[in-house]
Amino acid sequence: MNELLGGRIKALRSAKNFTQEQMADQIGVSRQKYARIESGANNITLEVLSKIANLLDVTVGDITRVLDETPAVSYRAGSDHASSEKIFDMLDLFYANKHLYTKLQRDANI
Image 1 (cartoon, rainbow, N blue to C red):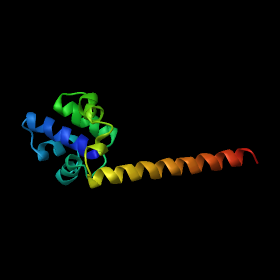
Image 2 (cartoon, rainbow, N blue to C red):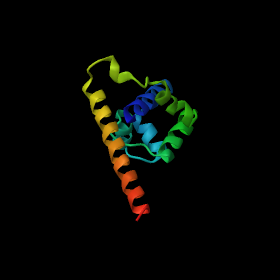
Image 3 (cartoon, helix red, strand yellow):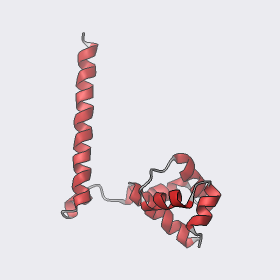
Image 4 (cartoon, helix red, strand yellow):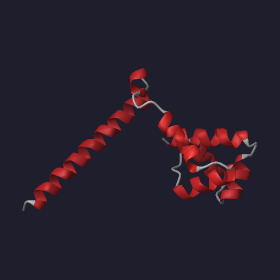
C-alpha cells in the first residue's frame, strides 16, 4: 500500500517539476524522510498526505485513488513473493482477530 501511494505521489511531483527537496521543505520533513515516503519505506500520515496534496494542487482522494485501482486479486497473476507475503499477513490478521473475538465472547459469558 505504501509503495502504491509513494509511486502516485512521485508521479504527481514529477508532473509539477518539483524536486524531493522542494517538497520536503514545503511539508516540513527532511528530504530523506520524504524520499522514504515516495519509496514506500515510511508510512504516511493523513496530515502529511494533506500537505502533499495541497502542495501538488490535488485532493487526498486524487492520491489515494491508486489504492482503488489495484486489482483485488493481483496475487493470482503470478508467483510474486510479495503477493504471497500479503496473503499470509492477511491470514495472520484474520486468525488473530478470530482469536480475539473468541476470547472476548468467552469473557463476556463468564
